[in-house]
Length: 108
Image (cartoon, rainbow, N blue to C red; front, side, top):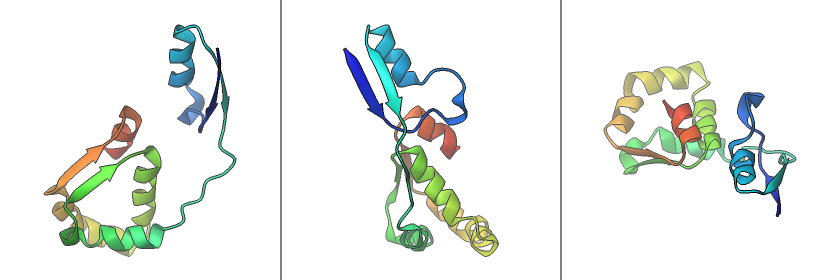
């Protein structure tokens, strides 16, 4: 069977994509077509929520892009300082989950 994968290529291009490799091991041929474009559309809302940990019970990172979005929210020096001095410890006291190995590796 020929499988069409619509996803971003593996970061850094080191080795075959794990999905292509797994499908090949089961006798399937896979073609990967990268997504055309991606834009974060609600970073301001995310940033506001990140700085209100008392309003939330925890965090769940469902993809590498979720980790990237949080990092982007902390790029501003003033925000990063506030995060490091106060907010980070409040989140660390809560439950934080990740979905998948790639997401977990980025979240460390």
